[in-house]
Length: 110
Image 1 (cartoon, rainbow, N blue to C red):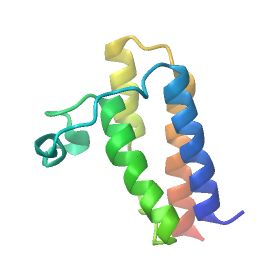
Image 2 (image 1 turned 120 degrees about the vertical axis):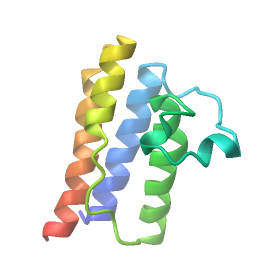
Image 3 (image 1 turned 60 degrees about the horizontal axis):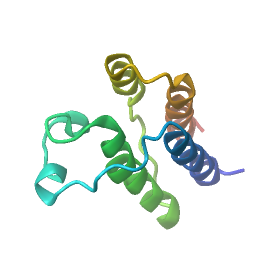
């Protein structure tokens, strides 16, 4: 399986995990919210909203175009902080985010 296929598989697992945790049905952010200059748009949206409408959307586009994948995305620390603060019991969500990060790293190494 090539890196784009592995990333696509991991993104589908992230989507399923967010749905199972009832974190997928979030309001689509406004163009102003999407224009945030803060990491993960922390000043304009919650992490599940950012994951769905920014992270998954951008990575899906890279997979579809077979474009170069990011060398590093470092989303796991933000996901861990969000889950702890929101008291969302979804250890699996963190594992899926880490798996996505590993696909990105594997691309730059190999």
